[in-house]
Length: 68
Image 1: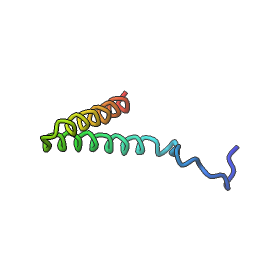
Image 2: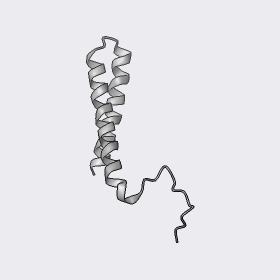
Image 3: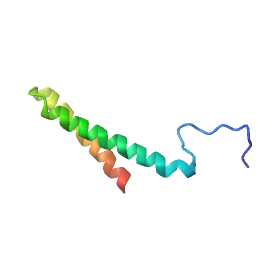
């Protein structure tokens, strides 16, 4: 039973907003992936390039997990 004075856990979005929240998260992950690619194209530093590629891979994997 839910009580009016209970607060919702901020880490858990309300179920009726879950789809919107997931879409927002997907947009943020895609933006991160694009940013890492754009940044990688602008650097000549091999160490930075490697780091940006790893970050891009992580963002892309997050997108993939959200899609499935």
